[in-house]
Amino acid sequence: MNWQGAIAGGVMMMAPWTGFAQQQQPQPPLQVVGDAIPQALTATPGDPVRGRALVASRQLGLCLLCHSGPIPEERFQGNLAPDLAGAGSRWSEGQLRLRIADAQRLNPASLMPAYYPSEGLVRVGTAWQGKPIMNAQQIEDVVAFLRTLRN
Ligand code: HEC
Image (cartoon, rainbow, N blue to C red):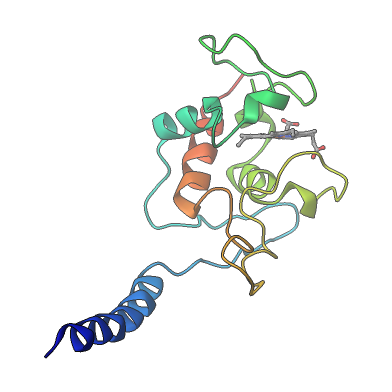
């Protein structure tokens, strides 16, 4: 095979591989029941330590832009939204999951971003459309952390 054939062959190889990778990581649909998503989005349970890091993160979670919470090492915290302290007592696991995944489903005027929007997942479009801010495992990690915030 000459070099052109090798490149063409490589492209042929990549397309099915890409499809295969997508099949390996299906986006589970959001199963909303009332004001909650009772079912976990992943088989792997959420990790509260990773969830805490996501909530504190100024790149991904940005939760402390609007919320305050029991994360003392973060000096600048928001006051636009309820304190996250006690969230695990106020809400069930499923209620927390829907509030993080798609707050606008409960309150269309909410300022809170939908981190895993139900609609975005079925929208077909350019690369960034329909791509959630967090993946399903990160949603589970954040929920697991919030569950530890009891009062
Ligand atoms: C841009 C502002 C903003 C950001 C960023 C944001 N939230 Fe919120 N959040 C709100 C507001 C405002 C509410 C009050 C309810 C509403 O308006 O939807 C809320 C509600 C909540 C609630 C329910 C509050 C209660 O009554 O106990 C939880 C839990 C929550 N947010 C967690 C998070 C987490 C975790 C993150 C980051 C992954 C986050 N929020 C990011 C604005 C924000």
